Amino acid sequence: MSRRNDPIEALIELMARLPGLGPRSARRAVLYLIRKRAALLVPLAAAMQAVADSARPCLNCGNVGTSDICEICQSEARGNGLLCVVEDVADLWAMERSGVFRGRYHVLGGTLSALDGVGPDELRIPQLLSRIEAEGVSEVILALNATVDGQTTAHYIADQLEDRVALSSLAQGVPIGGELDYLDDGTITAALNARKRL
Amino acid sequence: MSRRNDPIEALIELMARLPGLGPRSARRAVLYLIRKRAALLVPLAAAMQAVADSARPCLNCGNVGTSDICEICQSEARGNGLLCVVEDVADLWAMERSGVFRGRYHVLGGTLSALDGVGPDELRIPQLLSRIEAEGVSEVILALNATVDGQTTAHYIADQLEDRVALSSLAQGVPIGGELDYLDDGTITAALNARKRL
Image (cartoon, rainbow over all chains, first blue to last red; front, side):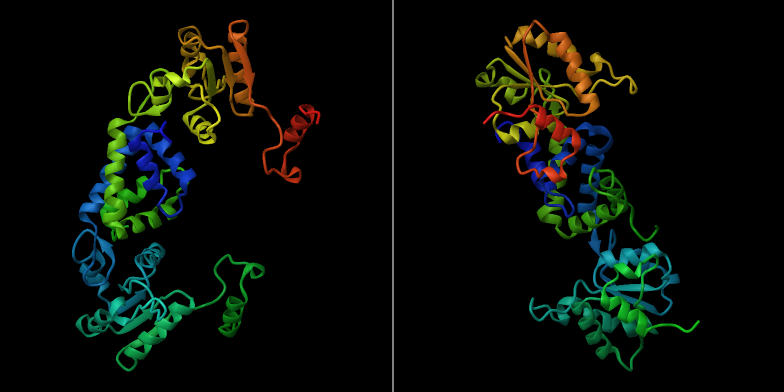
């Protein structure tokens, strides 16, 4: 629309491409940004530029950080022999939020998919194999998503690592606070099969 | 969390303050931005800086644009004597999207509110009154929201403008595509009271 000036329109179009925002909420967000020019718009532009200049994948594990080797891989304390394999950085961040895992990670960058032509070499699986010896890993925890592709990938990795290192995967069952009525059949089946004696 | 480096963490915190995004979706959006560094993150940082440098309120109507007087106020064709009063810029943009109104706007910047200490002078109402003569306005259309505050403000403006200019407000009734079953009682009452003979 001619009424709206170009820079504002351009910003709305870019914002609308963010996950979780559509054209309407992007417009709302841009108006909000213009109103909060000094408090939010200017710092946000600077923060984006700073991340664009500094963010890079960790060469060792695939985490996103601002140095070639991320803080987790640099930390001696976290080289405790435990290595948690996740699909992507979002999963790594989710694990870190829980604060319960004190080892290191390996980010695959996706799942194996014959359909999409994603093979082991696209997934940083060779790097995973070479880390086992290099970092003296004693146990690999496969924290892949409970999807078909995730589990296929877990099986492939398990095949590769068998006899070289202890393997485990996250337990499946009823989520904390979950109500049976809202759970899918697969989760209930898994929870029942893995039931614990009291 | 120490694991996440400062610039990324800072960007997540700023993004989480946007309307429509929370901490979790902000994190997701930032990961997406880092993945799409060249295609989205860098252009978005530049677009935000461009808007921060150029966006300003129109001195005449309160619309947001990149010049002191917005395109609508500059357009001779839109000085047709019709003036549409809206609460904020989002409402102006919504009216413009419909493309049906070809006059000018006046953005109040909110609604009267005794509770929040918002009086006529905070709302660009004096500027509205002075525009009536200056621009030869023949009809003022009150397009304020159908809320208590919006309607209070409309009544106040109507009192001020009575005998000086023709006044109208948007029709109330069933929205296009609306199903009676999902409408509130107030809307049904308004639609029934304003029923039209076929």
